[in-house]
Image 1 (cartoon, rainbow over the protein chains, first blue to last red):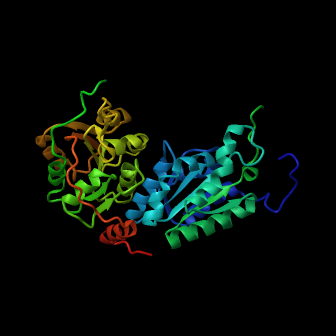
Image 2: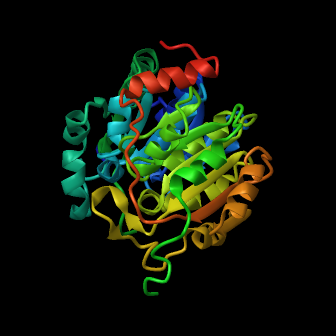
Image 3: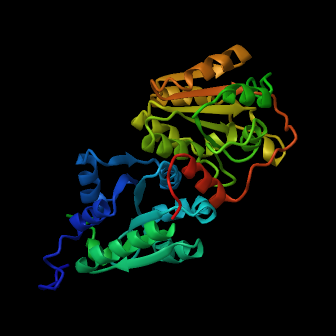
Length: 180
Length: 198
């Protein structure tokens, strides 16, 4: 952002915080459809031998995968872009009916300063759609909020057999440069 | 294409009974609809995880479970329609190559639960060849009980990810309903593996 001066969060490396909090939550599986906003967490997960890092063809695969990992006693997290939330809707019934910890981290599109208006319909519906399916949601727009909010979401997922999603706002991620 | 593959000759209940006979510590995940009834008909078991929804998810549940439990053999039993809805999962599974995972598709070439409409498999899509193209180490199309016997012998080998399409008759045997309480089935399954509920 061109007008952003020093802010309390400007020294916070939220991209590393995402991975650090997942590790602290004893996550052993990071499953994802890639997004630029998740690139640091994905790279760190790929490099970590204690983590199964799994690229998916579509986001709902991650719900089945994490249900299975939990049957086997292990924790995971699903990383995706807001457009992927739309792909997950019906499959969220699996979490609602079996109550397993489903932690999701969602990078937002169609949320703020979006260049591609085709992202807007799903982006604007993302949080409401998750809530309609029984998913608890939080959103972070400031770097210093990512770690505590993700910690809280992970805590409530793993202590409550709940579906919890942290939305990472587009202001946090930064404006995508389409024309250089 | 055409309907060359629209029906097989095998009895689905007999196939599943054969696959699960003497199963020991085999972990079983079932796709919604007839495969869940077939596995229930072969005998309820603490190591069974029945899906009643989330169509397309059975193979991915199997992947997550197989990854978390590498010292167990995992068998996904599902239908052609259920597998078709999650076909991208075959690509994902192939990239992971879980040595302890086998997917058995009871392929009747139809959507049996909804009125026996012909499926893509019935119209010529060979899911075993899709899996082969994705990179599965072992794939088969099985049309006789000798093939089922051979598959059963491979379930506990844990020497590579496997997928078989088993061509069964397009018919709906009487429903044998597994428990629908997903929390109960989940906690029972986990308890059998030594994992406590919350």
